[in-house]
Image (cartoon, rainbow, N blue to C red; front, side):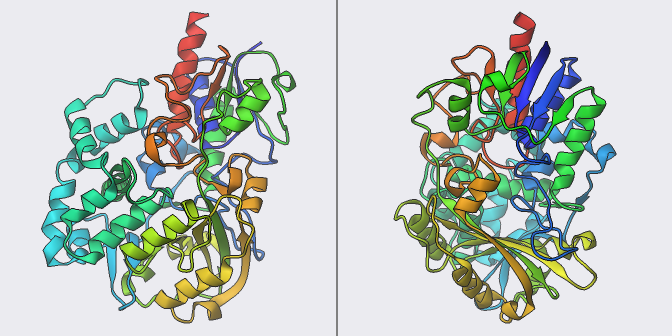
Length: 469
């Protein structure tokens, strides 16, 4: 009998398996797709030689993850590549605000009236970042806070809505960039704890940047799987699990799946009935005949580029997708241009480019024209660079990854108390009514992103259980 079986080979499932195998437990992973990866994959979606990331592409949380930093993933091929700027947010006048590794450069891009405000905002937290991020991403009860004073201070700043935090800024440049940071998790700008979301992304950039993985996001998953195999674990692909009886006998079963799928497979009935899913995304992967012709010079040097004319436009786009049930006319966009720093992703002189906007859950329309109209506002002539495009709406996203219900790449709404307390209001979110069944997906704290911390935290709950039996 195995000690643990993990269902789902995304970053969280693989991390949970690695953490258990490192402690001497026998582990097997079962994945429905023909490769490991979940939200961290790389595929040729457009033309031969153009390697795209179907989901996550830039990785501020991965490089800052306490779980990943404790593992020898570099020995298994993972190499982080950094653009000159982690992120840029261009404006229609041809200028841009930036999120730089340098606090000073970032502050200066906001203008003189907000530069000091920004420096004072991040100053208490950046020197204590490694401890803070461990405390922040290990909640709840998976580890006692190492610096409770800084964590409490962070909570005072971050738990109110982001709109409260941005009142500190006088000009639109800082407000707009910060609104874009919050929108990365599709959270309404006025929601609970959205200030913390924006602040975490900013601090992550200053601490270690927003890199891409050389060769694509698949490198992260492949490194985790390679390390797991060296630890004695096994990985089985092309293995769809419909019920617990489909799996070999084990002392524990750990699911890197949506709560909905877990309840169905494990026979938990309506246990997760109250879990809410958020809006979807419409994504386009581009093969380009050269770099994006951004008007703002800073955007040409950035790995990630946010698109939204101002904070009001971003807020309107989020409300349309999450509350009004319609696709926005001017979508807020997150774009990533890996080829700025990684020449392995496309043929010589060409580039891959990744862009998405938010749409209602399950939306079946085509947002391509709206996305490209937005891009043309900040990069005139963009359409002339397009060699090929691969479009993916909510139905296609859900078909490619069963965790993305309705096209929700966050695996659950990041709003209200569900930002922190997910998938249920519980002090033990990784456990279920079945004593041998656990959940480790992005539906558990600390939530969405490629960081492995949900798997790391769940593994702690599992090995404590295994040592008791």
